[in-house]
Length: 341
Image (cartoon, rainbow, N blue to C red; front, side, top):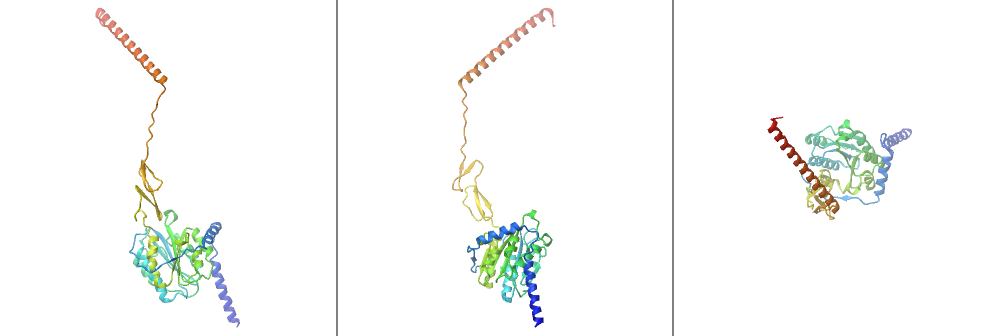
């Protein structure tokens, strides 16, 4: 009996230690974490949820460079066959991305009651090696410590030592969480810290996933960052949706109604006009600028005064010219009489 009681106490101690570990967020601004949490709870009453029906996945595209970390739930509720579907989803995602040292880097964090970094951002910088590493991932079986997994991704996977690019390179940091259950630890504070550090979080719920927890984890706007599929059997169909989100498609290249110039801005666009034109109120068409012609009319008295001055000046110049001519003539007469002076 004592042995059983001691085992229960020990297990409880391990569980509390794991939960406590998710809250030790040293190095992060508490005010920023609080602000992130408040923003998330303010929107949690909204129903931001995308239920995706099966659809054919698109071909690969040239994605914008990312530091991308998958955080996958392999707890006991995820059956072996279902976990294989998750791995197919990861492999399909890798196929859609432009993987490489200067392009997108990928890491995988596997979690249940413990967390295992399957491979880091710097580990595999080409698709064949990365997909081979994905096939070797095994489920961890027990528990659903989602908060601990997010913390591990933030403090271990998204570091420069692990292959993440420095902030000066302005490479987006993205985490995609896949889970089918309810977290056994708290996710709000650690998710807020991750978002506050610059990580964009997408939350994918499957089957029995707790939607409230997904909304607490995901970035805003929630309608763009929370997804749901009914079974693991269709999870790979999410690939096409993430392709639209992560590929960085140029909105102007997709077609626009700007008369002159289309300017892409994230997922939207706006119109501009060529030099010498202004944008009309419809924010699409352009009109030639009206040139202002300024005619300067001087006062009549000023014109008369200028004319009188010009006439006086001309008369003075004529008088000087005549005198110079007269003096030149006299000098010539003297030279004729006396010889050169």
